[in-house]
Image (tube, rainbow, N blue to C red):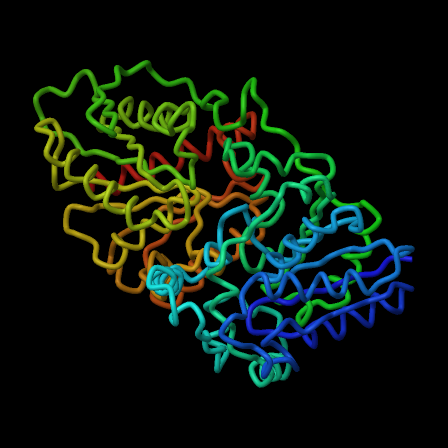
Length: 508
């Protein structure tokens, strides 16, 4: 018989698992949902020394109390994956599988602090960790309403009554549990794992596969055939929003089922495939982190320019940086073939914490392009792609007079909840009402990842509400990154139409 040990996340106790636990029990499994020290019904027993090791000991006590004839599946939600991994590392021979439920990827030597989604809160906690002493032995107050829970993850799908109960039963989190590093011997690496991704809070399976394909080194271990994935279209608390579906996923994970990721194609990943249009081989001029493609026959007249801003996050050690990718060089050469200066930059969006840094890179690239004597500094277009599109909020919210058009192709137009960005930061959806008459050209793919498509629909709803000038170019059969993934006339026609629309506004 399988025994599930369900370990809850920050501020919460075992009661959050009630409905999921009941479904598992009905399927014939044993279920344990312990309250960790200081949480749930044990909120009064936390002391100054309560830390991650305390919670690891709590999970170990449950493991050691279950008969050796049981196959153990350890499930960790959010912070709960840290004590789960710590305990499994010390009882690896007892554990059949570990399941991550909308949780990060804890590493040896790092505290749970590293997985706190709210970036501002993470910085505050890091300062406490530096102070040490009494600062580390305190308590982090629990959320008092839905807005505060939103700092820890999306509450999408959680019924109002369940959210009220979650708030009522929440307990302050002992700071030591977040600030003490996780120490692993490596034994846990032998235990098969599964992950339940909640696409309403962030990445789904397709987006995760794309990141693997991009070469992110920290994710390469996920292509191990012992690792499987499940996806639920809900927020960060699936045990409250989708308890039945979560139970089904846990049972399937226990049976070794689930989706497997595939290794990146070392020969030719999709983003390195050829641009769909035949474009002239316009010479590239490299200036710092910016490449310029200037039409040969400028005639001495200053020309409009389009700056192409790639998506991300892109690994810092990528073997080819985006300005060398065929898709961006292709767009820039196409612009030059149409008589305007095309420019591509490499910005430093290597992690979701890097948006402020990348924004500064884009601003510097804009100034470099505008300062070039061959460029008409009063006729500039900015063209954003994919995960780089949140950077467009800076320009939508206060468009300068020289910005004649803003384009976005398969864009992410609102940060995912688990990115933890400060309220109002890098949210094109919120900035659009301040865009005035700035024209926007948006290329939308019909086979977009649901979590990204939702942000596009939010943006278009906002555009309708405020009367913004947004032209939508649809690619019905296109996936994210359609230019190198969709052969034939549909991709070529979409790229051509988008370029014509942008240049028409740029020249107006």
